[in-house]
Image (cartoon, rainbow, N blue to C red; front, top):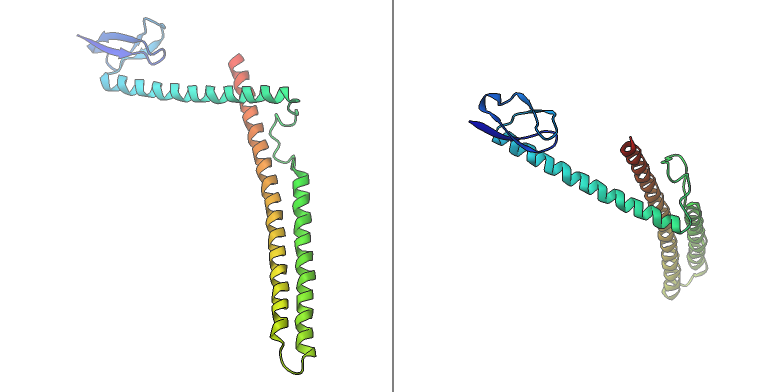
Length: 193
């Protein structure tokens, strides 16, 4: 009686005698030595081959996307040669955004100090000049100055953090792209070999 099995290398079906179960025989299609598997082993091998095919199709789709993006970028003026090689110590490509963030951060502290000092001096003046009692009407103006100070400080800080976040995100995107381009080049080199 014969066992139906598949070749481990080419996936072609073949039949072998019962006595050859677990041993190696020549595949009639690719002429390579393959192990004779039982039905469960053949099923597991088929599932494994299907998973590998799905992974290779997914890789091929990603590489096609990278190739298309690279061609589109070339039409718009080309990619710098430094981008094609991942350089983690190359520094930021978004220096202006980082400078803007630093400027906004410094400006936020200047606003906080100047407007805050103004509010403090108003409060001290209110305490020192008023012998009759505390003028609650003037306190509302001081509270308004403090509120404007805090809102201005918060808005400038948020803008500074947004600049830093956009610069960091942009650098990460460039690094990922450079790594993917290196991967594409390496796979094309391996494909040529």
